[in-house]
Image (cartoon, rainbow, N blue to C red; front, side, top):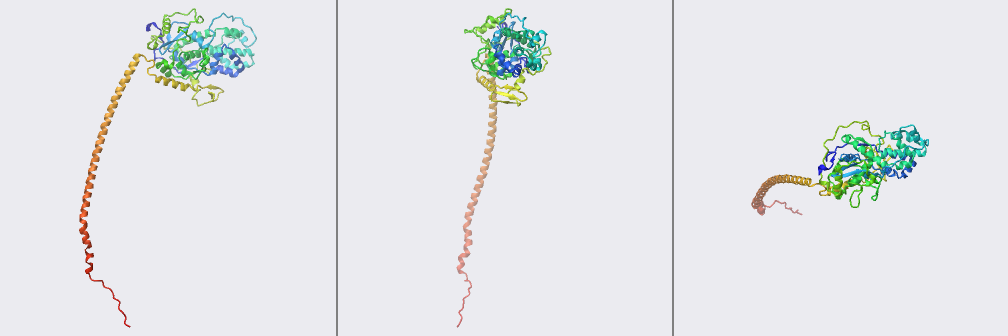
Amino acid sequence: MGSELPNRLYGEGLEPQVKKINNSCRLKLLELLREKMEPKYKEVMKDLLFSHIMVIEENGLKFSARLVHSFLCRELMTSKKYEKWFSFARTPLRFSLQEYHAVTGLNVKLEKISVVKWTDDMGFWSKMIKTNGRINLKLIKEKYLEESQSWTWVDRVRMIYLCVIMGVVMGRDEKVNFPHLYMKLAMDLEKLRRYPWGLYSFDFLLKSIDKAKDKLEKKEGYLMEGFLFAFQIWIMEAIPACAEICGRKVNSNFTVPMCGNWIGCAKCSYQDIIDLETLFPEEVCGDLHSFMDFHKDGRVVCSDDFVRKDEKKDERVDLMLDMIQRKHDWRKHVWGVVETISSEMDEGDEESEQDEEGEESEDGSETEIVGSSHGASTADGAATVSGRKKRKHVDLGAASRKKKLFCDLGATPKGSIDTDMQTFLEGLVQSSLAVFGEKLSQQITDRMDKLETVVTDRLGTLESEVTQLRTALLLAEMAGKTDEEAAPSKSRVDAGPSKSKNNTAPSKKKVPTKRKR
């Protein structure tokens, strides 16, 4: 059955790793617009068209290049034109217009909108259309953001809409000029709201993913356009364990669109992702969601709003859909790998560019948040970066969530390891324990032999010392008895003269004489 299913772009464990992705989806631009044009920015935020997109920047969700790149390398190669398939923990996951709509909430219904006619109000954008003028995000930051102070109120509001579209929804490079179609739509906000931004931004993101295939082996990284935050949030929704590492939900009861319900610093390493995929027990990490929506009976939702007439048919995808609906256990499945992958990549001008100020590169965002010596955390969970008038959101619970997740993974006895791998690991552990036991037994025997030798030597020394001590005590005792026997004769000799004292002549004494009277 494996030959009847799609192949992976890279084999398991052979995915290349890069340092960064230069993300053209610039949330920092929204931060700049809010600071410079706060009243107009708030007015655009009230519009339901892009409010849930703009709230991503307010929530402080950061871009994870490692997570996005890891999934790009796990693509399942199909002939589908308007959907992508990826595998995680050997389970297939679909990223189609249906999932994209659930994440972004953008309009995906194609309507006939006349954009040829527009009303000339003699303002800035009217002049740009009439003169075929060129403007891009880079020029707006460097020039027109200050000059817009003299524009009309509605032209400044139009600029915010166009920046959200080009900088986030479409995720275009900052040097790409605004299409005049977008300018004409901005002249009539009702037409702007009816335009299927979700349809066209999704198609552009898929083209960007296809284009990135030739850059995945660039170790230093590459530039990627498109609404990559939507792709990242889809990964976090499809794999709850990844969400635990990369962020957290603002509201657990939040439904759709999902992009406005995430906050976090998105700090995860390649090793974190590999560990999650290798040790993936469903009871700890939750189910993998192959689709965003399900019927109550578990069957896949295929609404007419997401069906494309020119979509290609792929029997391998139909087989995967059938297996998913039958709740197939994918943990034992081994995906095939495409035969050859071109490692020769074209060096374009856009890939050689360095990170611009407004680019959301993972390296820049991570080094500025937690652990930076240049920033101080505040009580509300934000960090003030010295030299900049910015407040960086800090995900204070990220480290504890990651630690708890991997502790739970470590406490799981078997996880999702297949039978062959389990047998191999058990045999490896048993053989290792046997070798360890033999070495430990030999070491104990050697130490006991040494201890016995030392004790024997010490006992011999003690016995010799005791013998010498006994001999010395015996000699001392014998010498004491000899002294007692010799003591009486000596006393008699010493006492002889004193007993014959009475026979000696008395001492001469002078007798006093009496005087005669």
